[in-house]
Image 1 (tube, protein in one colour):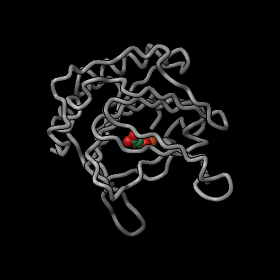
Image 2 (tube, protein in one colour):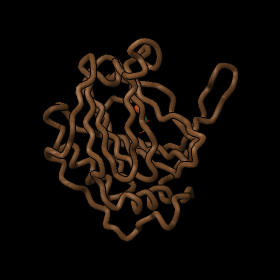
Image 3 (cartoon, helix red, strand yellow):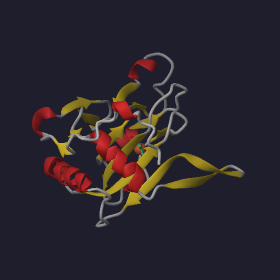
Image 4 (cartoon, helix red, strand yellow):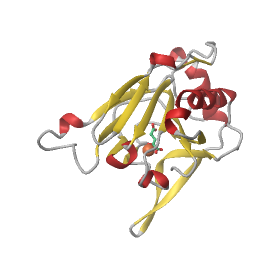
Length: 217
Ligand SMILES: O=C(O)CCC(=O)C(=O)O
Ligand SMILES: [Fe+2]
């Protein structure tokens, strides 16, 4: 259990419910056919959902080979494949609502759900695009619902943008937690990259739930 969200800040009584997406989603066009949609506070009762997921999901640490060593990936994971029951009905509702809103534009439904738990500021994910599978060559969408304490999700054009002329200004930063939704679309996974950086500031735990179409990781 990583229930380090401060008790006084945790509102476990609020009902877990989704607002309609409709035109409350704000789209930002990026370069090279990439875009992001943002819908702050899409889910209410997000602290209660965080609490349930953090204690009930079978979290596992992933190990990854890096050069000569095998290291722990600094976050905990759980993956729900196509047709697998999701760990909370609110996630089924989110999945259905995302499909109702995006399926025409996406041309197919979201089918899988990947969950990540960032226990504290030492947990992170390095710069990457979700390019395992079709997303390496095709446009797609990845929708991320965040619950728990906000952490910044950074986005930058692939192959730089972090430093140098015109670079730093192109790193976008979205503080995501407490029921916020972000959807990365178009060429975003190929032409841009994203990261959740480590921080030495004291931060509470965050869970992100990523919905993806078949064959996209
Ligand atoms: O935690 C997040 O919001 C991002 C996770 C992510 O980029 C990934 O798992 O591919
Ligand atoms: Fe990612």
